[in-house]
Image 1 (tube, rainbow over the protein chains, first blue to last red):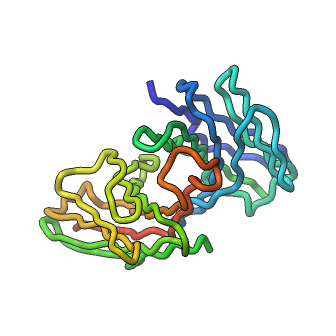
Image 2: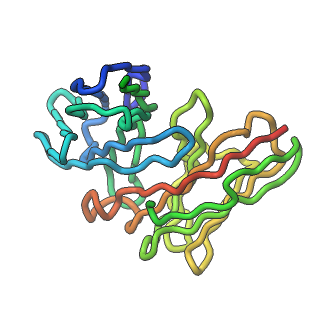
Length: 113
Length: 119
């Protein structure tokens, strides 16, 4: 079993829809949770990071962490065609020498105009 | 623009050859990470350096090696290249070496990647 599981998609939605992207994880040691966006043939860019359980909002994006369920989500409101990309979750744990930074395999999102 | 630079952008070479990929981290970042991303694969962590020293190793083949120089730029050397080595190679950098310091210190920022094609 992978430490981080992410539905690969693709996920197609109409413009203006609310998008929900999810990751589950198995290692309860993970402390920090990140979402990256990767456009085709580009490097991943950091969208959001969170530490504790709960919600964090940034514009149209909301990151949600449920540590008890080992489940994280990224919500995109009023989705735009420019949001079409692959979204990768990432999480980290540990201290120097035991540090882990694990990425999900990514979910491909297509927002249709 | 993340502030991480990678050269070259594209590289086409033949099987059996050796290539060197270069990465310059963001100003102030001491850690450099190398990743491989194939068409059907997610990001595969290869290796991490912190302030010139190797810190962590992932799924890096013995034919691959890396180093980080005193000016903190890093090079990834790929030798005896095979068709299956064709991929996007990303470099990322962070302030800290991993563990402690909070999310911002350890968050990784990615370069634009080098696309390697082995024919």
